[in-house]
Structure formats: structure tokens, C-alpha cells
Amino acid sequence: MDVIWLNRNPSIRYTYRPSIRRAVNNVLVGLQARLRTRRVVGYPRHLIVDLVNVCGLACPICPNGRGEIPRQPGIMMPSLFASIMKTMGPYLYTLTLTNWGEPLRHPQLLDLLAIARSYPCYIGFSSNLQHLPDSLLDGLIRSGIDEIGISIDGATAATYNHYRIGGDFNTALTNLKRLVTRRRELGSITPKIRWQVLLNRYTEPETGAVEALAREIGVDSVMFIPIFIDISRMFTHTPAERLARDRHWLPRDPDMSFYDTDTGRLKGDPRFCNKIWDTMVIHPDGAVSPCCAVIDPADDFGRLTEGTDFNSIWNGPSYRMARSRMAGRRSDEGHIVCDHCLQNGVLIL
Ligand code: SF4
Image (cartoon, rainbow, N blue to C red; front, side, top):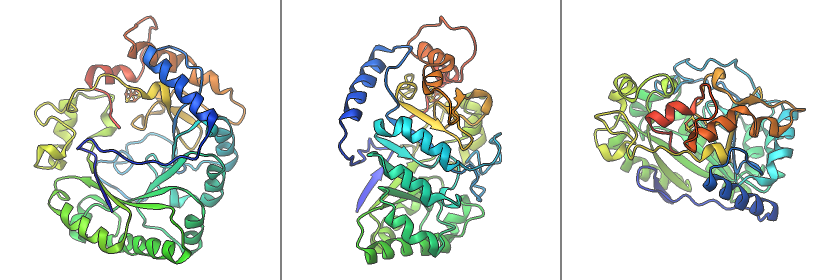
């Protein structure tokens, strides 16, 4: 079993099916990111599609759990997803089917996974595993997707209940065991099953217990992820203000946090973001954001529909402006959400 600590320069292994088209795109996009071009000839290498933007839990730091995402609740229509994948699928390295919602709540999830699997990318999503009906279990395992990350914060119900408000530890654990057992029964090596733990004040002392339990159950990996604070106000408040709101969630050990606990800034104070050259986030209604943290539709970079010319967004005014700013050119007037990152440190991951 792999144990991955995202606070310790992790190396995560992805396996890709071969694709010449994708390899050529990779070289092109990488070169343009190095040259900090305003336009990109090519396609994103990484795509996040939020299949559903409701979750059902009320986790106290998650913007969704806090009820602070000003988007309409919705689900991604298969026809729109098929059109998105037709454009971008051949070029993707990774396709992540979660942003702030719970994919297992999508009523046509297996149809969407079948569309996704017809492309050679690494496909995964995260789930709180509160809802795993028998009708979904076998289909998930047979879908051919590469990985499912299961969010269970802690090795005991008491610890879990601090953060996963509205979730049930025993349900999550039972469903995790069902997934592992059924995968074995079906003789499948996919999806890889990763137990994900947010490192917070309460999970900090239980990392060893999580590892032991994960080995006993037979998951493929455990990933410890330092908690991100106050994402809801990432683009409207200073690091110090955000720290003041959520400081009490940070682990006591500073090595288990992404943040400088004096200033609230991300350690290393990162000021460059590759995402605007190689990543796209798409919400259920087709709205496009440059990264997972953009929760306000006012900060979106456009909206894809089945008839939209992809380049009108990927090389549209917002992406061009963001790339100019990241390159240190201020030729485009106006506000762009990335401005806040340039002043306060960009979101890593
Ligand atoms: S600069 Fe900030 S807002 Fe822009 S894409 Fe990067 S992390 Fe997101």
C-alpha cells in the first residue's frame, strides 16, 4: 500500500494509455507555458469536470459545505459532457470528475464514465461514499476508470464527526469495504482505491491508525492532504483574514500544514501558476473556471455549450488577460481573478 503525504513533495503515479496526439500537444503546451504566451495552440492537459455540484454534507471549511458557492445546483448533462470530451479528451493526461460536489449522486454516472473511458486519459474522482447502492457498485468497478479517492477523515467516528458534518463514519467505512471486496470478487485491478484524509487538528493524531486500518481493509493507497483554509474567500480576503477565520482547523505540527501560521500565506509564497496554460475546470452548466478554487460565477472565464467554439474561451479575453498578468505584462486593463493570486500567492496543486 502506498502512503502519500502531500506536504512532503509527493510523487503520485499515474498510468496513461499511449497517444501520439496527446504527446505532441504536451510538448506544444509545455513550450508555450515556458514562453508565457497569451494564446495557446493546443488543448488543456488536465481537466476537472464537476459532474454534480451538490454534496449532501456540510464540512466546515469546504465552500460547498459552508453554503458559500453562489452557483445554481445542477448536474452535467451527458450530451454536454460528450461534446466536451470530443474536443478535449484526446489530449488529456488527467480527467478528474469532482470539484466541490459528490459524483455518486449523478443519476447517469455510469453513462458519463463510459463516455470518459473512451479516451486514453487517467480518470478519477473523489467521493464521501455515503451513497453507494448495489446498482452502482458493479458498474463503477467495471467502468474502467482508474481511481476513486474516498474521503474519510479519521480512523474513528469521533474524529470523523468533527469535520464530515452530516456524514456517517460507519456508512463510509462499510462502503469502502464493499468496494474493495467486490473489486476482488470481480477480478478487477481498477479502480485503484485511495483513502484520502484531510490533515486537520483532529486527524493529526490519527494518521498511524488510518494507515493501519487501510492496510487491514486492503485499499491501494492512503493520501494525507493538508487542509486548505477559507477557500470561499480566497479571492476576496487577505491571507491573514482567511487564517483568522480557520486557524483553529490547522494541525498543531507546522509540517502538516501548507500555510505559514504567522501570515496565512502559503509556504514558499508561490507566485506562478501553470494552470492557465494547461488546465480547465468545467462546472455542471458548462461554466469554465481556470482552477478549482474559483467559486463565484462572476470570476468565470466563459461557458461551454454543445455549440461553443472552444477557442473562443481557451484563447478568449479572460484566459488571454490571465496569461498576460502571469507573464508580468499589464497590457490588458480590467480585473481578473488571478490578480488576487499574484498578490497573495497562487493556489498550489
Ligand atoms: S492564478 Fe490563482 S485563480 Fe488563476 S488559475 Fe492560478 S490558482 Fe486559479
